[in-house]
Length: 150
Length: 362
Image (cartoon, rainbow over all chains, first blue to last red):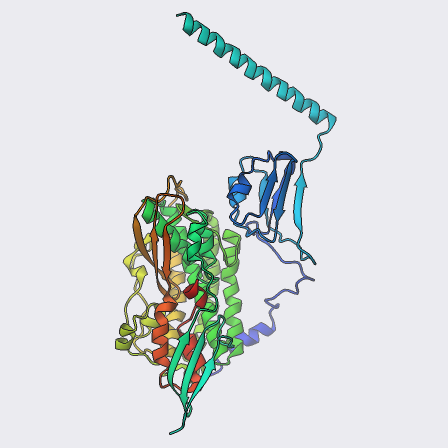
């Protein structure tokens, strides 16, 4: 029995910093694991649509034709399903939360236009790939012909 | 003898974080009968198994309740793993139990704070919740979420905790233990707290058995029943687990059981960190639950035994998923404690079963 068991702790608290923060004047601290919002490194995105299919709340929309990737942050539940399933690893979970806003915003990202150098590099890579495919097809046809002759 | 009067209690009441209604039949200042009513926040989450596949549904089970969030994802995952015969890697089981015990700590500290608030000790309430923040910070550092963790999934866990991080958690818990000791001493020794709790809401062991109560509410009435002592998951690796039982049966005993369970949770976490095995944390899930297979599993949630049932139908959607929550078991016992109590003790009696209406209604 007895009273004033909490007095020591209460007195200590007089000389301690407050346990709370004066948000928004003092910015909140996030850990590296914090689930703030999903970000997309759009230039690496191949618009495969896996994130759209796996999203449990249908917050993500992907358009392959227009090369756009759209997220509705108000529907997103930060479950990281999309980040885990992204084959190109261009989706990341950023630790900072989206800012407070007066209205709901839907973020749409469009793949940037390529610079002439990038376009030339891409065309060269495509050409090389096409040549590789043609060579493989020719080799296969030759093998088939050989097999048919035997 | 006075005339009988019916006083409505709830669904909105300062001691109730969630909506529950009681019709209190009172005579003079004594409660003669209490008629409970729930159903204000039914969301039909069990029906969602027909819309979300069995891998996605773990996200729904986490959102059944904000306090037992990790427990429900763990219970669901264990049920589906039993349904599909998946063996979880040992490290994942250890991590699951560590997170589950941390959940128990934060749940009990939240409840102790609410109890202090219920009997008007504002300072104690604030200190409990300040200390609880440290547990939530551990959650945020290890999983990225403070309440909804998204850490547990069918087949294992999503994130690993590095061994040096685990050592850091133990250091934090040791620091907390000293401060928590001061709070617990206040709860168990302070004259004003005792005058408000001792003898309030008494429920005998026989009545408790008859009302099929579970969890700390049952253990405070002398029922030695804790699912953790059956050794599911990593609980089997504990050297010596003894449930905390009190025979007093009143509000003070419930406070004592929950208060000591926080210290027990710290001990469990420290023991598991020492024994933590290395290896994989996730087992790849292949196939879907077979048709017609039914599985039940039980889990000791912070509020008591929770019962899960799942049935597969050969597709990626489960045929049926059902949860029986601890609060739905404890409401009958609570109504018994209310019979014959003073009107002024009703809020405390309702609070001492730690009602979680979100779980109960789903």
